[in-house]
Amino acid sequence: MESGIEELVTLIERRAVNLFESHQLYCSESVLLTLNRAFCGDLSDELAIRLTSAMTEGFGGSGCVCGALSGGVLALGLFLGRHHAGGRDRNKALVAAKELHDHFKETFGPPCCRVQNMKAGNEKKAHFRNCARLTGAVAGKTAELILKGRRELLDHVDRQYLEIEDSVVKSTLKRVVGLIR
Image 1 (cartoon, rainbow, N blue to C red):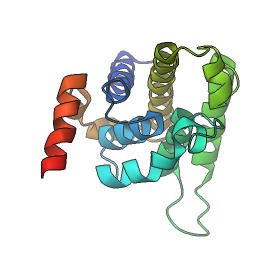
Image 2: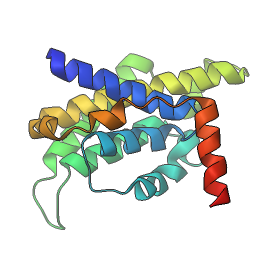
Image 3: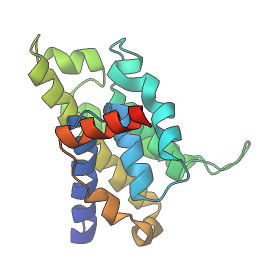
């Protein structure tokens, strides 16, 4: 991987993990929002979060498909998917989604949230750390796949957004201020 792309992927991984670790967003939300903002996608922040909010904790807490992986697949559709019904330009998204799934499976094992978190046992902190790790890894790999299909997006990266690092305290204050408004 080229050094410029590698640096960008690292920024994307860090931002997705930061959104998760600072308790602002869940895994799927962190992945889609980060990639949408990084590559100046068409979704508002609100819509990106709404689209992914039911995917957290393996589809609404059911423990099925990893939420981070689900968010990554949505991001692939957003940037590589077809643009209209009947369009024949869906192959990029399909190939990339399979590659993301296969990479996840080879790297982390089954893409099942429940199985992934068995590794943590009943320890909440270990579970949280594992989800944060998966969130960053999926965001990074998804970014690589998006850039593989749409290299021109390198010219439209919002680095300022990617360099934001929120603390838990700062994100809590944001939520409180939001409630007051």
